[in-house]
Length: 305
Image (cartoon, rainbow, N blue to C red; front, side, top):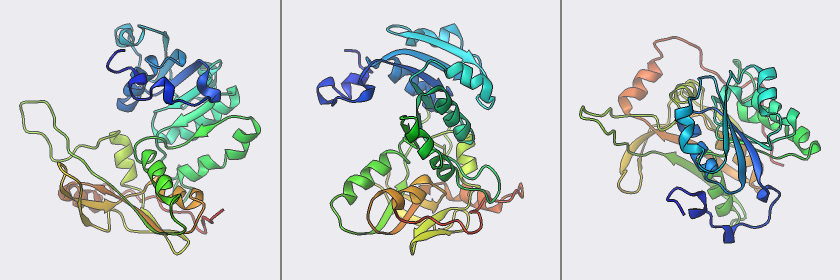
């Protein structure tokens, strides 16, 4: 077994029978940092029979060579914002995995639905237009369409959101009511270079990061979403070693909007804070570009099921 074989992490004996246990044809939309990692994992997954990579930048044969050791791997150069082209590219695939920019989630999700493919993405975004419905909630409006088509869509299944949702659910199953869910995200980065490394590097897409900090954060409190100022709620949070104490700030995030809906019991408060260099936080709050921050649409409410 090779070191990076996915079976090393999820051995076959631990996997229960599931509709996806058959060999599947996968389309991967977006070959950025996360997409590259997933392409490697999927190409080593014994359940994947073929992998079609879709990106707006041409993927060279040299770039595909490491993935072609076991399965058929193809590449398609197109802009996923062009829905008709995307539908043609993913037709015949069983699963569409979206690691593109989150602004394209809804269109990619609809393309997967149109060709009868299951769907997965790793994160959502804010409203597509000022005072529009938050991206994750807009995606959830397709629930009934996917259900009628007997398809599955797994939304925001990255680290946070994603693993954070699963951990919250596992903890909540042991409780009758939940007073507070606090999600704190921080870390350290070492850059392999001779010159000094920057004090802060987003650990995911730069475009997604700067989009996130321009969306007014919300907290779940008193049975509804409440807006807060950009990068407010500064808090020194003690992460486990070797990370240590870092300054965290409120940021817009999917867990705040979804956990109260799906834990199946009352939730008092949910908030999400991200560790950012304080100097950068001050610069971002100053907003030299003067662009208006996205905020919740008038009258939006989330109610417990």
